[in-house]
Structure formats: C-alpha cells, structure tokens
Length: 329
Length: 147
Image (cartoon, rainbow over all chains, first blue to last red; front, side):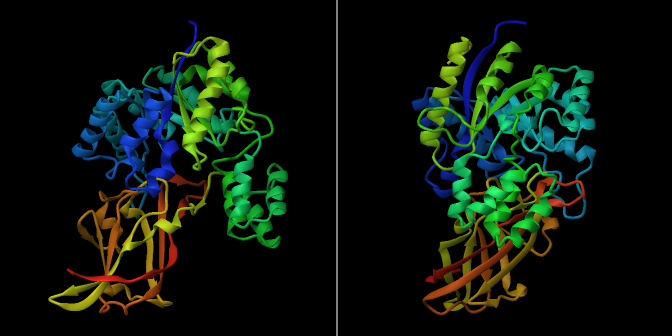
C-alpha cells in the first residue's frame, strides 16, 4: 500500500440554489469561483445542469467544454442517475437500465470525466455495467448515501459482488453524509423558520432511534399539532440527512478499499472551520490509512451560502489533510 | 428509509410572472398563457408527470382547454407516457396555453397542482417517491401578445 495523496475537487451541486434562482448564473460564474478557490476538478450532475438528460445536446456539451478550456478546469466526475421509473406503466427492465448507464458513460466520455456516480443500479447488473465501463474506461461507482450506511446488508452484499467481479471499473463512492452524528443546527433553524415548533423538532430528534417508523413519527407530529414543516423534517431526518449517534466508521473501513472516490458532503461549517456534525478527522484517517490516491469531491448541500461555506470546507481539509501530509492541492 | 414525499423550498419559482399574459389570435383575445417550471433540484422525465390541474381565482380550468408545450413541442399532458424521451430541465419553462378567452386585467390567484413520480426512488412496498411541484401565487396578468 502506497502513501495516500488527495486532491480536492468541488461538486457544482453546491451551487444548486443560485443555479435554480438566477438564469444569468451558470458554468461561467461557477468556474470563476473555482478559479478563486484554486480548484481544478469538479463534478457535474447531468440531470440537473443539462437541459436534456440522459443525452445532453452536442451544443450543451461543447458549451461546457469550451468554458472548461477558458477557465482551465476539468470535469472529473459525472453525477449520473438511472431513471428506472420513467415509464408510467412499469419500471425499466434490466436491459433498459443498463442502457441508461451506457448513456451516462457516453456523456462522461464526451466530457472527459474520470468517474461516474451511479444511482439506481441493482447489484446483479454490475457485472454487465463493469463490462461497459471497461469499454469506456470510466468506473461506475455506487453511491453510499444516507440513510444508507456502509454496514447495511445491501452495501455489504454489493461489496461481495464487487470483490467477485474484481474490476477497477466498478466500486463505491462514499458520501460522508452517511456519517452525520447529529442534525445540523442550521437545518433545525430552517425548519423553525418554516413554521415548525422547536419542541416538535426536538421530539423527532430525541426519538429518531426509539423504534418508531417514519409513518408513525409523521402521525405523532400531526397529533402534536405539527404541520407541513414538521412532516418535511421527519422526511429529512429519516431520509437524506439521517443521523446516528455513532458514525459507522467500522463499516467504512470494511469497504474503503473499493471506494474509487469520495463525496465530502457537508451542510454547514462555522467560522472556526470545524464541522461539528460529521466526524471528518475519523473519516479522513480511514481514507489516508487505506493509501488512497485520488480526489475528494467537496459537496456542499446546505443550499444557503456556497461562497462562504465551500472556502471554509477547503480550509478545514487543508488543516486535517495538511497535518496528515497527504494534500495534493 | 429514504424520503418518500418531497416538496422542496423553491415553489415560488414554479409559476412565472413574466410568462403570465393574455393571448390574441387574429386580433381576438382567445386565451392566456402561464409559464411553469419545476420545484426540484434536478430535471425530470416528462413521463413522470402524474397530476396537473390549474385553478384561477378558485375555479378549476377544464382540462380540455389547456394545451401544454415543452421543448417547443405540444405534448399530451394527460398521457405523458407517450413522450418517454422528453426531458423537463430545471431551467426550462413549460407553457400552458389556456383557451378560455383570457383573463380580465389585474391580479389573479393562480394555483397549479403538479405532482411527479420520482424516476429513481423506490420503496420496499413498490411505491415510488413523490415530488410535489405545486404552487399558488397572486400574479398580475401581463400585456396581450399575439400568438
């Protein structure tokens, strides 16, 4: 195992809100921001930033690549999906699903991406996906994303599949949102601003692991006089921002050798540039110990202030990875 | 369990004030237009549209009066499965052309009920995630435009 070497990249997903709200804000402004940050590599979510998906137009691809040349930045990873539910009458069958992945491979190839974040690909299709990914020489990476954790049986089953396939063209991208230990106070405050009662939100948090199902918690919120903001908070804390008092670091150690790259997910970092809800030091220790050489893609999902938050994240990474002596940029 | 019901915080961007105007044809006012976008963080296959209803000042607009245009194509929004390859990007406005002779000048309360099946989230019970892209807004009808 060699010495680890980690380069920081930034996912354009972090600029989602601005992209949604301001039609004048696009790749050019994002790349100017990457230049200010000293970041070369980025991830693009095709279904979000192209007007046509899964096959963006030639004009869309050319426009992006032209701006990449202008600002000397490169698309490192392509955030793909497999929209298996696009038909109203049935879900896509296996052949159709693999076809969706190949469309993403085609786009990633045109963009010059080195990785694909895969989504919605069942485990039994990975041998076929590995074959197609080998043709394009772009790994397709299953994203382990909250509320899933590395120790979950489905992830461990995929681990076995990947070990059996033994191909560099499939693997995991570990999203650090799986390791949230407590809800971010900014997210809590946002629900209060939307009209949720603080005591209701505290009830959800205190009883997240009491055995109540999501539906039971939603019923409880209605019983406690909660409205739509509380229901959304239940969805969030049982779903994409699920949290657990103790991060699944042991599970992470069991799959880290199969991780092709990482999503440095975060929601909010204070002025001191310390992430208080995701144990970054522990996570990065595991990655460095594994001898990983590659990219850590910073993924801001706080949606509020990427111009403030992403630099704070970079400063945090510089501190942690700098001390470990593995930072490449 | 992943998130089964999603209504993100950008519903204000769904109904477009600059795309709300009366429409004339051969000089006669015949319809009004309202432009519509998604309230989601990514685009969606048009075929995932499950429900679309339009209300103005509390009255439902009969479906047969509404024509639906996306990516410069007139699509049958009652049967979105007919347009499996059509994609609705998050920066793309769809145009609803409503042949009700247009609306009186001034402000109107416009409500759009719009729901989608998630194309990529499914649950153990076989249900797909549910994306609510509805919006209610008071908007002033813009100057007439000839079709």
